[in-house]
Length: 162
Image (cartoon, rainbow, N blue to C red):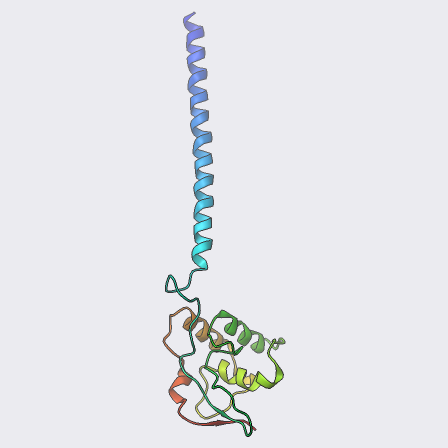
């Protein structure tokens, strides 16, 4: 009888340990899923923790086009939507990789100048002036890691487009 009691007691201890292991495993899975969900949600928060997820251009440039009134485009705003965000950096990367971009033909000159954020003063940019450094600077500005662009120091002049 004592032997049977020890066997039952051993089974109970074994079941209890199994219960603890299964519970610990389930809790681990639940916590891991919750952490993954929190990380994915945090990745989409704007850098300032609230408000808008983009920034306005730090400075603007002028094009003198005869007979055409154009709102001054901003540096970093490649697609012309009035904000600097990762989409603009992606467009610069596509130009650098010689892939097509979805910008109307009449806006391409503006887009190239807007994307050349480390460009030379008083020189109209072309697609060959864009590089990965421009894309990186746009991303850093959109993430609020930069306060402006190198090209912004030279925006007092009048740019002319032929």
